[in-house]
Length: 310
Ligand code: ASN
Figure 1 (cartoon, rainbow, N blue to C red):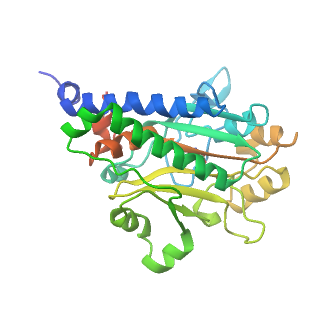
Figure 2 (cartoon, helix red, strand yellow):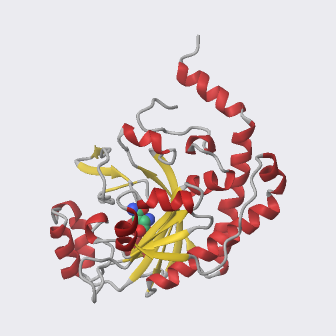
C-alpha cells in the first residue's frame, strides 16, 4: 500500500495539466533568458547556500547547517550576492532557487511554495523607472511568445492571454492603503484586467536593503508588480541602499544586528555604487499564464506549506 504522498505524487505526474504547465515553463524560461541576453545581460549561476542570505520582511523558519564549524543558510534570495556581483558585472540574471519555509497558513494563498525559482536580475547605475520598463518588456514578450508558441496548449486550458500595453498603471502604496484599506493588494488584483505596479512602499513593509527616497523619508524607491484576475504578486524589486552608513542605519531601524550581515557589510565598506534589480517568480508566472487557481499544479514535486512532499 502506497503512502498518501506517493499516491498523490504519482497522480500528479499523470495529469495533462502538469504537462501543459511544463510546456509553458519551458517557453517562459527560454523567452526570458533570450530577451535578457539580447539586451546584453550575462547569466550567472545560482547560490544555493551561503553564510549570508535575505532576512525577508516576514517570518519564515531558517534552515541552516554547520559545515566545518561554519554556519550556512539555504538561500532565501540572492539579494546580497546580486548587489556585490553587480559592482563588477553590470547586467546579469540568475534563475535562482530559493527556500522559504513559510508558516502553514500560507498554503491557502494558492501562490506560496517552500521551494521556488525566481528570475533574479540586477543592473548597475540604473534607476527604478528603467527596471520597471524592462520588467514590462519581459512580461509582454513572454505573453506574446507563449500565445504564439503554446497556442494549442493555451486553448486546451481555455486560456487566452490579454497582452498589456505599456506603460503599466502605477499606484503609490499609501494611496491604495488609504482608499481600499489593508486588503488593497488582493482587492485591486481581483478587479484589474492588466498587470499593475505598486510603488513607493513604506520602509516598515520592506527589507532594509531597498533604498529610501531622499525627498520623502520613510518611503522606498521600490516596486511590486501585481497580476490581474486575483493572481497577486508577480515581481518585487527596488533601488538599493549602497552607502555603508545608510545600510547600517537601515539595519538598526529594522531592529536587526550588524553581526547577522557582517560578511556583506565588510564588502559594502569597500564602496559600492547604486544598482536596481528585481525578481520574477517563475512558478507564479507559469501559474498566471495557465490560469491555475493553485500554484502546486505547475510543479511535479511542489512543496506546499505545512504539507509533507516528495
Ligand atoms: N529578488 C528581490 C529583489 O531583487 C528580493 C527578494 O526576493 N526578496 O528585490
